[in-house]
Length: 120
Image (cartoon, rainbow, N blue to C red; front, side, top):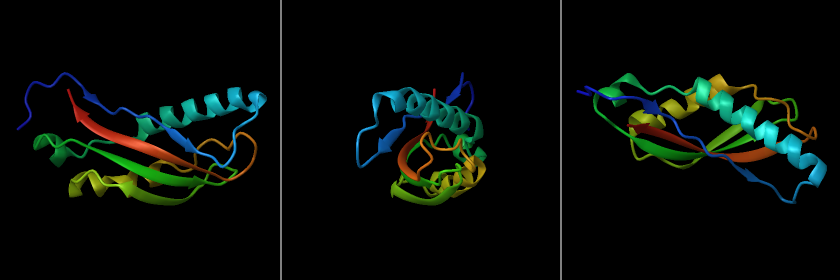
């Protein structure tokens, strides 16, 4: 059983999958949009209790498609954590995340979310 742990850290890095580069004016909007997404992920991610008790850690990569209005229309686990208990949490997290902030220039976007469950 997990005893004296200081903090459970959910570290998020977000990588954008674009077909073309954003214009400089959009870069600021893009950056604040990504920060808003990272903040929401940090707020909504949960560490499954049984994974905590068994000290299970993992990292997944999830591709999500976001409509212009911020609704997540699709998701795909492109890299599993290797831990069923954590992988089962991913669709639940995606459901809690939707809707995200509307996309910066009103177009559908796909991004890859690396999602980490790590004990420290």
